[in-house]
Length: 390
Image (cartoon, rainbow, N blue to C red; front, side, top):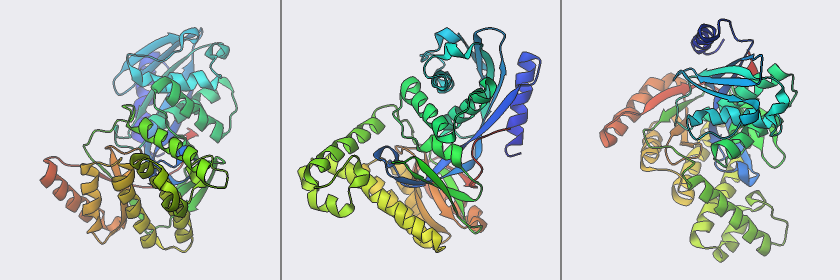
């Protein structure tokens, strides 16, 4: 089993607390975003992959309507009843779980009848842009669905996690993170179409891997930066629907050529924000064609283009991430690099020759340390299986 040591630690702590092993354990991976940044809520396209690090959720039923939830890394426990499920202002980590439980029962968790005793533990680096929150939501929804005999398809479960993030955690995220965690496949990318919520896997081949380089820059999306960019995209779509002689519901419906011709009617900031997801959609479609031909270096060049768009137009990069990408460009064994996730800190995703992993890590670490005085965390990432019951 992948991440066996995390599973063993969780089950051991659960048994020590409750005197018996958990009835159900579910696992969900984090994700890397490979191409297609901030396109999900614009009904566009994304390439992502489930990673080989994730979160386990262990649960057993209660005899009454009481619920207990323990974060096994902190050994902090939140207690509530079926009738008091609500967003928490203290120990806010519980909101990803309680929100998911709430929406599994359509906002009426009392319908569950009886409560549960749950505990979770993972090994996804926090604040790295690898979506530890979505992994927690997906292993929660899998485990609780199994516990209560509730049948939902993968896309519906992803939407339940997304709704928990919106309403309990306060982050207006798209569906990318949850869908990537649910639909991942070993050795493959997940290609998502967020207009139709369809997901397919595309083989990457054995000669490449990804390297995540975690900066030490602050990564926080709830502070308004994410929300302001989402609003700019929505405002731009409304504008284009008024000037283009076709139906425009989201920026997915606008081509780069149309942006060039008509963006002059937008204020400068909104125009710059809009061009990023428009370009990203086109890069994902180009990338799919390149992968079919096995042209990995050309695919990597699109990743570099994507980062430049983040840096210059969407402005969701930062100096630390730019340093990592600029350093990577000079290393022949790195085919492509870009920020991964919401941005504003977190991690970069590099498409690499895995045989040169040590060399790549050494060069990037040296450059980063010389500039900032501390070291980034470099780790090889293997595209892996999606969420499942253990």
